[in-house]
Length: 187
Image (tube, rainbow, N blue to C red; front, side, top):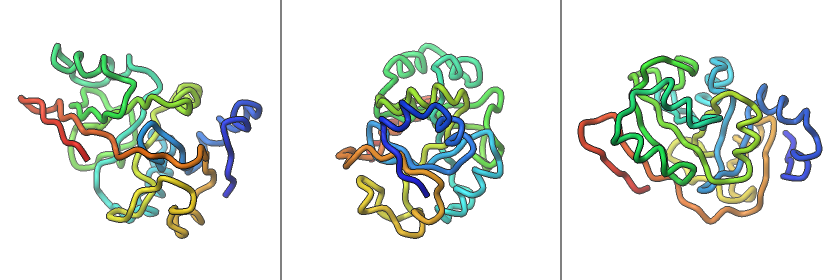
């Protein structure tokens, strides 16, 4: 496991490709996320194992907003919320064409999508793949806001931690757009 910071990412271009092949923890505009390339079924399975979460749906961060319109069912109502991105929201949308590994959301045909308002998002854009975004904790445990409160078992099982100091956020607000009526869930 290697801890890296913003300057190292900026000056070591190969790190972006390394992250793409790895399990990593990264900062967002809310809390720290545990992630990997969401198109890589093997890496997604490892995250499921780390979190002890066999079938809970995972959300993804997408490298550009256009992917929402290309791969998800949208309408005027969803466009209104898509335009709020980037921000501390997870939009739950129906999928019209899968663009992530089947084990990201094994039970239904929806996906949670985030675009964080944070400098690390620039590196996700450079990866050019959707990235798993789930809290850096074992399911049911406390989420990570600083490296000191990262579960030691998780720390042993990740390849990289992109560290940006203590984060004072809360998990993102979930906005269900896959239903007839919009449902907003603060967490």
